[in-house]
Image (cartoon, rainbow, N blue to C red; front, side):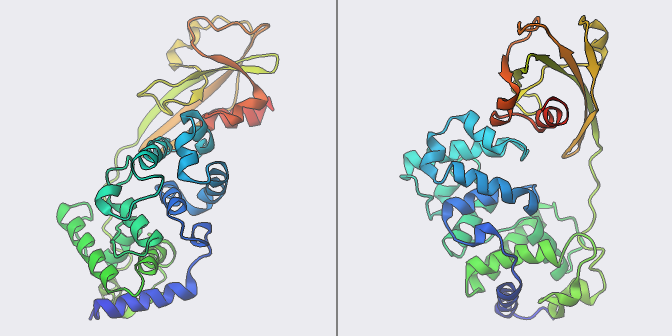
Length: 340
């Protein structure tokens, strides 16, 4: 029913040659560029990534330039993309690659896994896509494709299922004519036709051998996992403003957007303790990050001079300079909507 691995791999590669989306990281298979794109694409949509990818490579065209940069420069280029630990790990990883491997991403999986931020998936993506080596990859798209293709109704999170996926990915990439094209094809299929909802099976190159399709279960596989309960977070952001400048402080480790410049925060219950003559409540900003819903109420506070607010540690910055800093998306939203 499922055909041979080689036949399925060939069908998938042929489909990819004719239907692959034109994406900037597919224009040239430079290992550094592939690494950057794969990290950016983690938990972020392609349309969002593309402009960041272009700007990041323009600012840091190679590993050496990234390794020499200051962390704030890297986070500034990453600002707005979210999940800032990815940017920090890229910077740390570039330093390791520059020092240990002469600024070139190694072709050995064991060496890649020693680089900060590079796990089995990213290592496999670099080896197969950049170097065309027979290294398997398993991401969310590949899991979904395999779950439907093999008719897996069990949870995709079990160790047994994960082990099965990696073993199959190894077989498919070994049977492929081009590991580069096969692995991209698996991810492309999951991102376009074999999507989470309303899979377009009629156009799928694997349809004839797909167990999920033959049983009419394509809309029930993968099994829906129980969602984590959403955690509600709320705070007030104090926008101290004076003569074209605003006051920012660095978020401490353990806080949201740690290490980025941000507005000072206080708990909603502390609002009554504020003693300023001019306070204006701005539009509430809402963010959803993983299983957290964050609601932030910005309070605009006008000052006659640029003294440091009592008890705060930070700096005054010219408003037109703020977007060049590593700042949270909240800071950008508030500035663009009210202060520019």
